[in-house]
Amino acid sequence: MLETIRSRRSVRAYLNRQIPPAVEQEILQAGRCAPNAWDRQSFVLCKVGPDARGALAALTARHIGGVPADHDFFGAPLVVLVLDRRENLERRADAGCILENMMLAAQSLGLGSVWVDQFATLEDAPDLIALLDQFGFDPQLVICGAAAFGWPDPEEEILPRPLRSKIVALK
Ligand SMILES: Cc1cc2nc3c(=O)[nH]c(=O)nc-3n(C[C@H](O)[C@H](O)[C@H](O)COP(=O)(O)O)c2cc1C
Image (cartoon, rainbow, N blue to C red):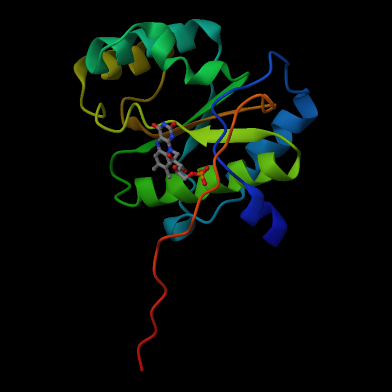
């Protein structure tokens, strides 16, 4: 576990290779095992298929700029959204635990991952609300986080990451 935690890095280039269903299932199950406030488990993990992915990328381009391809989750074979109910005030903290569980599971299985935050400022965007409605989600559900998963492209150069945060101790 400690080696998995230490070695995980964000991956932004993926091989064009599908993830076996059993591996995908392990990653999703790891997300479902995450700690969450009051154990409400009101979150939903959504695997994004090609049509939905295209619609989300186009919507992001409209809001953030660029073209849809710029927002296509680095071309990763698996994209997962974490949705939760607006009334869950801990939804973003919960999503952090869920996505970290999934990213560490992916790392331990030899896959890479990256958190993709393109929806963070769009929770109240009418077109995103309409799109989620079109996808058939309960209107109370909002996107709290998203991540891409896949086999890392060995050509991607991942620079070393010095740890700059502080540890302090109080008497
Ligand atoms: C809340 C959150 C949002 C992030 N959003 C993005 C993002 O939108 N795009 C991206 O490429 N990486 C994103 N990342 C990944 C961070 O950039 C990355 O974790 C950080 O640079 C440390 O590098 P490492 O993950 O390789 O250790 C996000 C990470 C977190 C935790």
